[in-house]
Image (cartoon, rainbow, N blue to C red):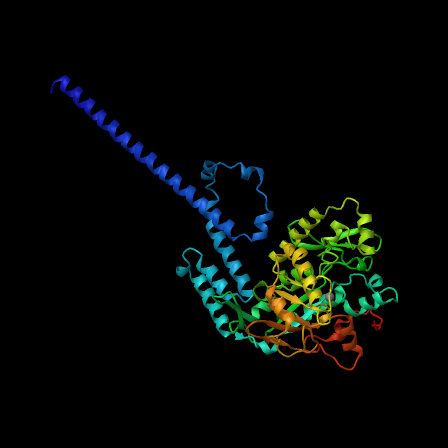
Length: 494
Ligand SMILES: [Zn+2]
């Protein structure tokens, strides 16, 4: 073999080796690129999942941190170290969320949540949980619509020394109509201990709309609870913090806490203002957060609002803007608040109302002027309803429910007649659910064109008479002697 031949062969071998190395490098680069793209999409999809599962109100309040908002897409690719633990974390989180739903008797929701976990069908822990939820669901029994009670409260008295001070008719009213914070907390606990579960009035029915746009109602046979549990409905009346309540030791306004949840402003005896759970909404929210099985599918109560002094402690009625027909306490309030801006006030009230709804509460009309609707003539019913629709409905997103003020109904307990003018007018205004006050245990009418329920007052009058009178009307719910606030001394007549 000559030298030329040998060097040619060596060169050829080197070229071959070089080519092989280049091919290997290209393959490696391609593989790395594919891996990079995969990791990027994986992280993006897990982030999306987490976002879509975050509760709505959190989504609205959580601001992106500066680092997050400045994150470039390729910066996310570098963030691969969190990826392996993320997958197990997701399963644990979703299983926890499913457990919460099951605790609220939403077994279908819980099972759906579990099935959304990747590889659910092959995961023994998950399939066992699904079977458990299904068994519990199958063991539930339909709620007997004839035995669903409806309780209601007014704003709670935080400080009875102030709430029950004096001997005028307003004091008598406070002693009769109001419940103290201690009484409310004890009732909530006692009813929970006795197996009561809060449901929405609308949970009791199936509502359908036909091709003409007419709504129809039928009993909801799918409303089921574990055997021994009892459904009840709740409402709150007059959550307006009327001017006449000032200085009476009750909350003054619903506001939002730092996480966007409803809480209360309360002015203490020394004039200082504090924020906290001083009324039914945040107190019940707290209780249900700690006892998810106190409420069916996260149900809360229905809040009945008038409009004449505004809503929720906000002075939103049109009179505060036009200064027409002001009462003396409205005028005094405006004089004390020279910087008042009606539009800002309405915007704040709407923000708070939205947060209350996001929390599961609903709003109802209590008539704009706290009207005796049975006694009023048609012209008055119409002008009052128009005011509610114009100055309350836009702030709370409208309502299909009317909770009659003074408990005064449109007619007696017989079905609403087809020629009942007030009923037909209210129907034309979109009201389908009607509530009166009726201290019997149960009063529920589910009719094709409306739903009507009687409500029981759990107030000073009722509690006092259940303990000191002859006719105890709340023994099915709790032992009133364990509830009645010892700071009550009497319940004078109005
Ligand atoms: Zn009222």
